[in-house]
Length: 309
Image (tube, rainbow, N blue to C red; front, side, top):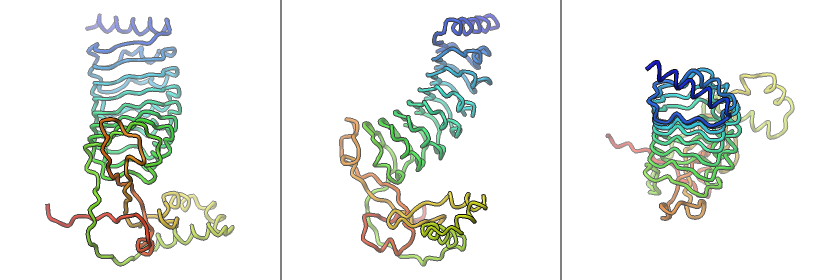
C-alpha cells in the first residue's frame, strides 16, 4: 500500500514537470495524493472511477486547470475552494452523492460545461445565473424540485438536461433561453386541467404594504425615499428580495398569486430528436393581486389538492 502511494506521488510530480494532463482513473483511490495540490501547471485532471469521499486541501492552487473529471466517486459535497479555479472550463461530477452545491461554484467565470447527473441535488444556488458562459448543463437523475430564477441569465446555455427530477414548473422567462437541445421528460410537470376555484380574501401584511408603497414611490423618483433607502442597509436587503408582477409590473415582496402560463415547446425550444412531441410547458409567474388576476391574460392559478393522501 505504501509503495503504491509513493508511486502515485511520483506520477503526479512527473506530470506537473512535463506540463501534461494527469489520468488517475480507476486507481482505487480513497483519497487524492497529497501532491495534487502542487499541480500548478496541469490543465486536465481525471479522477473518475475511484472511491473518493472528499477532495484535498489546496484545491485552489490548481490555477491553470481547465478540465476536472470526478465521475463515479462517493463525493457528498464540493468544497467552496472550487470557486477559485478561475480557468476551469469543464467540471464533471456525475454518479456521486452530491446533495448541494457551494454558491462559490457560480463564480467560475470561464465555466462552460457542467455535468452533475446521477446525484441527489434538491436545488441549485440562487447565484447560478452568474455562469453566463455556461453552454452545457446536465442535471438528469437528481431530486431537483425547482430551478433558480437566475438561470435565465445563463444566456449562452444551449444544452440542458433536467430529465428524471421532481420539477413541476419552470422559472419565469425560461422559454427565452437559447436552447438547442432540451431534455425534461420524467418530471411531474403541472398539466393544463382547469378547475373551479374560490377567490380568497386578500389581507396583506404591514411589511408587504409598506414595501409596495416604497417601491411605488421610487418609481415616482421621490429623492427622499432614495435617501432613506441608501441610509438603511436593512431596508435595502428586504427590498432586494422583492420581484415584479408578471402582468402589471408592480412590486411585490412576500405575497403573490402563484400562477403559470403554458408554453408550447415546439415554438419556444429546439428539442432533441427523442423529444419530438409537442408539450405544454408550465412557466412560473407571480401576480400581485386578484385585481390583476381578474384581467384578461394567459395565466392560470395553481390549484392545490385538498384530497387526503
